[in-house]
Length: 292
Ligand SMILES: N[C@@H](CCC(=O)N[C@@H](CS)C(=O)NCC(=O)O)C(=O)O
Image (cartoon, rainbow, N blue to C red; front, side, top):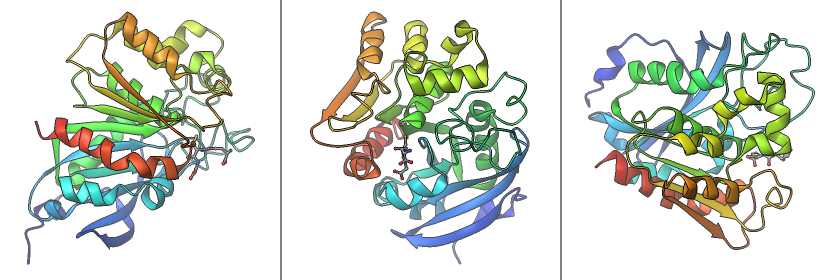
């Protein structure tokens, strides 16, 4: 029998599903989140290399309306993760079932739309703390339950989660080795989705919003050299709708001399079909940094 030393650690998680894939396992676990005060699911892809030793870890943050299932079933990330020996963690996008009035009223706020911020408004602040959940609680759960090399972690994501990845990276210099995003909401304080979410979770003082806006945060970034990769489809209908604003982020990066590669991908939309098409590139980008 192969060594599975990490299974001796006390498990604070319970397995929901497990499917062998590319020699490793795509699993889903649930746990009781202390920070969010509810039960949360997260996906874990364990590459074959995780059977015999520790592997670097890549956190994926999904977009509006998603659960952990969207990435697990539609992103086509497992083949490259197996090839490079990287564990991928894919959490849900918000707390669920907290019985907060208005939580289920729309698809772009409340359930499925946590925006990776720590809410400060009374109604939301007890549960909607996705920033601390993905940067602190979840990594400690993951590090204590899976064969993770915790010094080697990176983050990427899509849309709301692409922005989440950028802010997790920019707010924590040195914590993540690399960052990338698909069609991120680059400047939430200047777009309808972001303005709705930030006014709801953070209140009316727009100065506090800047602490969670990548185009603002990059202007004051001081940390290790950055190598940001962003893919954006030209046929993404949220681009002309002014929700994504990649040019604002690129301009802010130029102002602060932070290098960024924005690739405009001809004819691709906002969907997981688009992301699946470039997923290998993103995992290769992270592998370069995680294994350096
Ligand atoms: N409300 C629309 C748009 C929401 C949307 O496009 N969400 C993106 C993230 S911003 C997504 O990943 N949807 C789930 C999927 O495509 O699997 C819908 O529910 O389809």
